[in-house]
Image 1 (cartoon, rainbow, N blue to C red):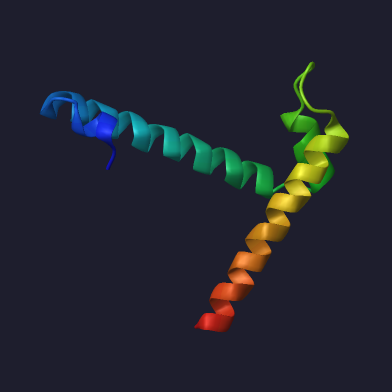
Image 2 (image 1 turned 90 degrees about the horizontal axis):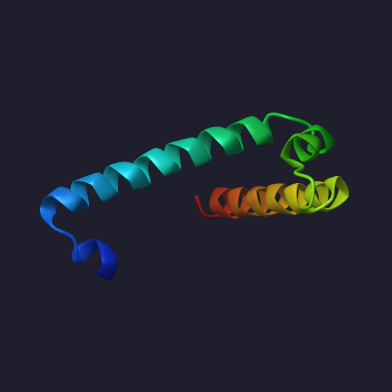
Length: 79
């Protein structure tokens, strides 16, 4: 997996793996929630004062959705 993980004891590896799986679950839920919303609504929900503007977030979300569509189209053509 990784040099860091491999340096841990067996017990620590189990805890590390559980933490990584938990983080992946949270990220998947957040992406699913974000992707269920229109771009502008998702950007407004993601906005944090001092961070990227709502417009910048909307652009980022659009770009990520476009990349996801392109990857899906590539997979469908290959199948």
